[in-house]
Amino acid sequence: MRINQPVTDREYLLPENALIVSKTDLKGVITYVNRDFVEASGFKERELLGAPHNILRHPDMPAAAFQDLWATLEAGKPWSALVKNRRKNGDHYWVVANATPIWESGRISGYMSVRTPASRAAIAAAEQIYRDLRENRARGVALREGQVVKTGFSLGRLLAGLQLRHMFAAMAALVAAVILLGTGINLLNTRNKMLSERQVAVRHEVETALSLVGRYGGLARSGALSEAEARQQAAEALKTLRYGGSEYFWINDMTPRMVMHPTKPELDGKELGGIKDPNGLALFSEFVKVVSQRGGGFVEYEWPKPGASAPQPKISYVQGYAPWGWVIGSGIYVDDVQADFWRQTRFEGGVALLVLAALSLILWTILRHMNGSVRETIEVALRVASGDFQTQVEIHSRNEMGSIQRALKTLQIKLGYDINQSRRDAEEMLRVKIALDNVSTGVMIVDAQRHVIYA
Image 1 (cartoon, rainbow, N blue to C red):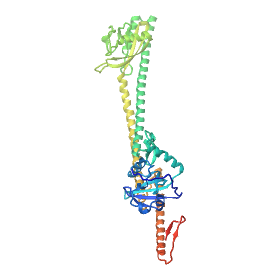
Image 2 (image 1 turned 90 degrees about the vertical axis):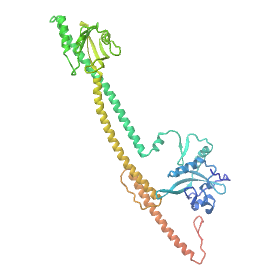
Image 3 (image 1 turned 120 degrees about the vertical axis):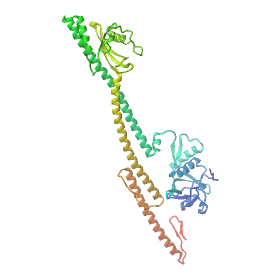
Image 4 (image 1 turned 135 degrees about the vertical axis):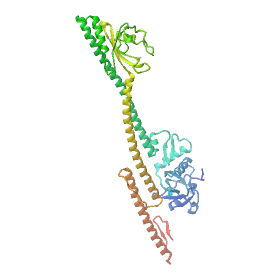
């Protein structure tokens, strides 16, 4: 970093209407300065032209500020910040510096800087932050494109740094996640609801079967049938009773011993206490336990299923008929509920995918339109910045992007007029100068600030 010495504590106050302009090449060598630049710097114009721009750098400016300046300009972006400059005699002056690349034929050919006087409040704030940066005491802040920003993670800064396509992709991903999460939660609730509804249905069927057995018990108590006949007819009635297509009922006693099983008649009359499922649960003893303790309830276990090679998870509801010491039960295979659930999953998943596909298509169409408009607007703005005022600004929409394009078109027209008028004024001044050069009497012309315009 170049250190210019000596320096004084004296501040040079710029006129309120000062407009300091300079241009450099890509290496920072000065190629143009205006009169206000010469006045503020204290150098002569010939000393400035061809000199490196850091000839004005003041030692109080932190190196980070100029690193940020060049990183920003080389990226093709404008840079704005307060800058403390050193005059030739060591005095200093503060400016609001606005630097920008100069574009020609779509490429950066140099840099321009336009400076205006800074306010006292802005100067005080800049002095503090620059001092902290010089002394490595700035914590949690940095310079980005000339502005003091907080470091560390910030959702706002993250979103501000995203390009349109990334923002739309993040938006689509968020919406997709919400849809998929909502679909997943709904399917989970649906599965639980389906299982619960099937359990309620099984309980209702068992209670209906229990009522049927109770009617036969009533016939036995009235003497219309003997108890043995009533038991036999009740068992035969339940043996042929079906619901839900193939669901059945069985009866065992409290021993437990099988009274009637419609699909496994070989168990009828046999002791059941030793029968266990693959997980080691003595299921018929569990049926008796549930009836003994609560009068009825659900039991989960595994049991052979017709057509399946291995026992399948099953949930059965059992309820006791106390007068005869019977346990009446029926159940549902969980894989039947699972099959219904997967059918529902395929349907809702298909709907979710259709919604996501439609949403993606809509977002892609919007993004494509916006990207095209943004690229076109940027290209036109760069052409205007390089002095091309003939390019037409096409306005394709009535939204915010259309408003930006209309504003750019207005700026293009106004700048084109101002530059054309300036050229006419310059041509008139040139004619006046030629006329004055040819008069025999000595003539001097000064402006309101007593600067010599012509002599």
